Image (cartoon, rainbow, N blue to C red):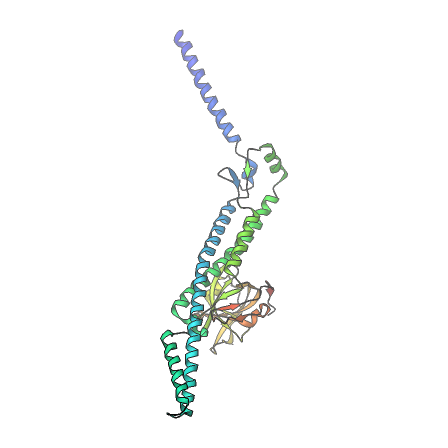
Length: 352
């Protein structure tokens, strides 16, 4: 009898433990804010946020990192430009002095009063020559190996910053829209559960501050430019996602892409082949198409007609006519390593 009672008590205790476990599980489950999960939110630390917010945070960190790397590189480029300008001026001054001496010597004879003047200028020439180091014509500075390497890196950073800035602003707007459109049911549930905290992970003011700082620090109105042979090369971004490098053609008004550039940018429905003459004078055949967007620095071209080269002409590279950018008053900088744009007109629709 006693054994039967003990066995019953043991079973009751076991059932009690099981019931307590079930209640504990139900209690934990009740803490999960189902309305948030239904809206796509996920737990992140002490907050519930959208998965897209983590991608946005990574992009913001990348944008800030690019700014940190761009500032010292731009300073290095500026110092190299200033140093070359000084050396070039000294070299030009020396050449001018040599010309003056040569002219005097041609007009003067030894033993005349001009001899002392000639000697003085010769002494000046010797002094200048001791300080002289090789300078490069600013128009050719972008072709020098050390400068070209820095400008290529700066071009890539410009493109990355442009892509990230647009992506950040777009993602931020979409995330804010989700928060604003939370249903009344979800809002009421949040009011009933003050212990539950939701995002956004990054405040709109913070995002705006980071993007403004990035645009100001990188200076998208000053597009880096380097030389490949005699070709002026700049970076562009196709369809707001795909960076590439093209040649600037001052007297042209066309955008010419290689087949690989066009495919990467999503161009598929191209017209038939037509004969074209490229800015370099090369005659070939190409197809035509329409690209939704092209960015170069602060300039944005929308719905622009493009010429797409055949795969056999891939080696020719892409071209952009400077006349396409007339709305931004493009000018080549005196330094020879950048193209300046007017930021007063940020977006244009090409009517070609």
